[in-house]
Amino acid sequence: MNDAELRKRVLEELEFDPSLDAAHIGVAVEDGIATLTGHVSAYAQKYNAERAAQRVKGVRGIAQEIEVRPPTASPTDDDQLAKRALDLIAWDASLPADAVKVKVERGWVTLSGEVEWHHQRMGCESAVRRLAGVTGVSNLIELRHRVQSGDIRASVDQALRRSAEVEAGNIRLHVNGGEVTLSGTTRSWHERNAVQRAAWAVPGVTSVVNHLTVV
Image (cartoon, rainbow, N blue to C red; front, side, top):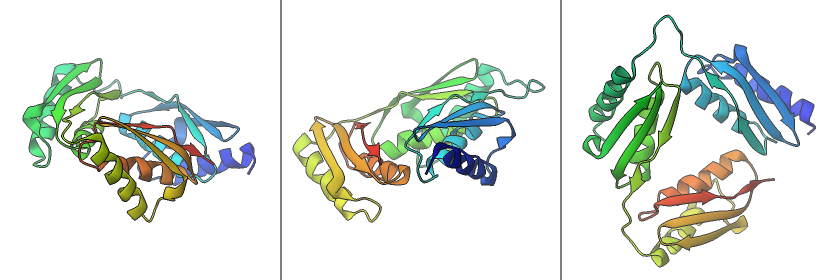
């Protein structure tokens, strides 16, 4: 597929996605790398635009350059954003509210602290991502290390082989403590993300470095 056709398909996917307003989003494609530009009114839309582009078959990489421009008619003070973010985390029983700290500067939310599981870390990010007035999120929440690297390697390998979404034979693993490095090839961004999710689901994994290439 040539770049012009791939650009057309990315634009169509952005327009098709009901969770975002693509009117002010631009797309350029070169060698299968899609560059997203323009602006949206909320950080959640920026996030959803990137996910929409990843779903398009043939996209090998994404450069995210979309700006978040909250409506100026109703700006939200940083202290209000921080309080709302903490409230959202506290209201979700699956998230460890007391373990997470929130800092907000000019609408940019920084999360820190320590939790047991990666899904808790991502749950905190997902909760604050949808808040009006948020312009970006830095997730610095760390995971507690609990098991030895040998256990982690075997567990990640088994998780990949169990997954119907993954061609495990094309994946290479390197484990150093709680850090898992993924290399090799995948057939799509969906498969690349599935491999990363499988690695994060293993107890004891504290970081995942994803060097997988979409071919």
